Amino acid sequence: MSRIKRGIITKKRHKKLLKQTKGYWGQRKNVFRRAKETLLRAMEFAFIGRKKRKRDFRRLFISRISAACEINGTTYSQFINSLLVNNIKLNRKMLSQLAIFEPKAFTEIVQYAKNKIS
Image 1: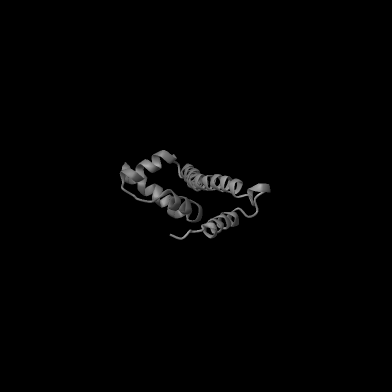
Image 2: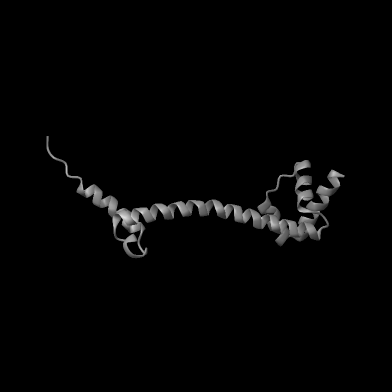
């Protein structure tokens, strides 16, 4: 049986990883072991950041809706509860957009939710 040399595959794998670490500082960009450690850590932070961004936007939407609810004479919790009770399915992103760009429409939604629950 003939001998199989694996250098080409390893080199390809190393080059692929080192290409991803371009721009990193010191050995983190050109020494495979350091680069791999750094890249795995960076990928972990990126994953966490994607989840965190969703949380941050939800908080932003809630604060916008809350501010708009205060203008319309209700609280955020009462408003969301009335939407749930009346089976009005609007997500917080859309409610936030309405509160900013279509305040009259948002006011109508608040009034409709209030009247239905009373």
